[in-house]
Image: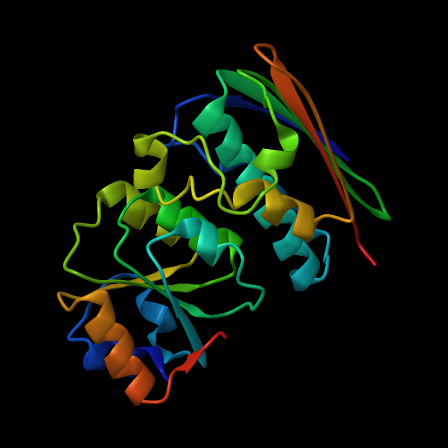
Length: 137
Length: 114
């Protein structure tokens, strides 16, 4: 089962829409609630990251019997120092993002903690691709 | 603790999800930082927050927190109520501070998630 969602940078009114849709699909499939929570928390953090940092992005969702694969491809500034970005507490988020309750430098580490496999490919001034995989067992 | 009791203890007003007032909750988590809420592993808890925007509702949805107590008398917009209603989330608003809400509810037996 494959889905694709577009995400606009800066549009906080729609942030979480894709994650909400994926949550509904996984519920319908009868996936364990603790696994659904890991999936949607990781996806929501990644979706908010696109809204907060990028110009636009696309989320590809691939639900298979063994697990879910999420690929988030954005056009944006990229991440100059991935090691720093993965450090809890480090953030480059704007004041506007912080007012929304984010930008505490916890998003990427939380995505990693909820994923079974997680990779970041980034090119500065071009964009970032996050790949998140979570097994259903 | 039954949600109706939560509402009574904080002098709250229910904005949506009235049918859930009969339900019980054992744990609560207080934060204005949604990134912190998203690190809570537990499901089915009361989110106590002073952050009143659409992302506090979305965060509750993703965190499996079906009940939100919005404190400090913050204004809840119709969009937030609509989003919460779509997702079956109960919203209670209280004029008390987050510290006061948390203290009252903790004293009355609601547990911390950690």
